[in-house]
Image (tube, rainbow, N blue to C red; front, side):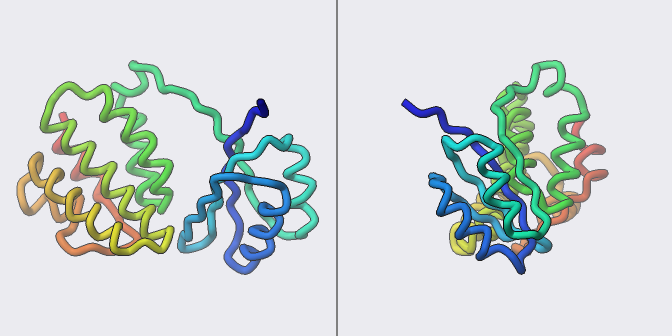
Length: 185
């Protein structure tokens, strides 16, 4: 049985159709696209070697970023440190909602306090709503966002909640990192 690796490819909008054709020609599976403000990301799996993928992509003569995704579980010490939350908040505010989602999920899985768990679950759903927007699935994004603000509201008073999860949906989402930091001991 072939071993498949997971990749993320980032390209500028102007070249996205060309890269999509290249990906289809190199036999990828589970292809997902996310439209960011400045670029498009394609997640995919393939049995091809990284060098083969790069050869096919370089022919396009434009810039791209190809990342091999390795499943690395964060250590408990890292999860409990503030660094991982700070990185997740930075990624949210940079529009990298999928990456933020992955980090927040690691924190959520290790959190014991129910209110904090629900808050992190709310942040995860906020990120997921933004990912669904990037995938042109607005109805799903709106439903996820609605669930997310209810979870966030459990932890924070109304005024602060607006800094973290505004009542009305918007894309791209920006989170007041300072408000999160001040209210999470």
